[in-house]
Image 1: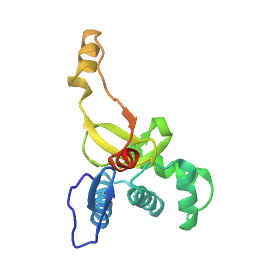
Image 2: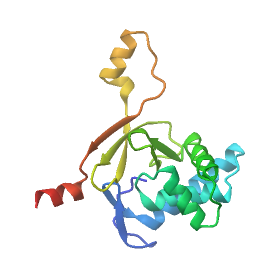
Image 3: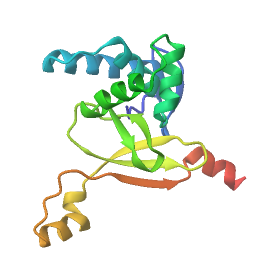
Image 4: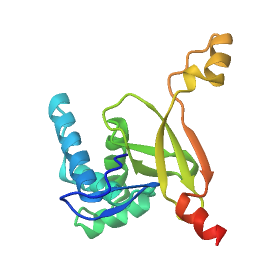
Length: 172
């Protein structure tokens, strides 16, 4: 969800990654998109999968599988690790979430339904994550791959640094 809407009927603005947006609208839009996608594809958007996506959307930061398990347990969905792992695997496999390799954690996709190569900016202080779209096939990596006869099918770009809020705190 990369909307730059500063306010809206659903509620006050809250930070999203590094942008401000209508948080309630962001969550409801993403859930609606997931429901529609699952209906089109004949997939089961079970209550535990839905809750896992809601949790990721509410956080707007990467969560590990055990953090997810704790949240799901609090919501009444069981306490066995496969509960969280299966829900997260479904979300990733269907483009509703991404795995942040560096953190071994998961974040809701900011561009659900879009075929894209995500690039993540991860704040090393507050763990917030912003997602952008990368185009590695058209850059230097793409040129090198083509020269080697290699076809890029998937990339993961992760950059670590300070988000604007943490950077501002560090400057004061």
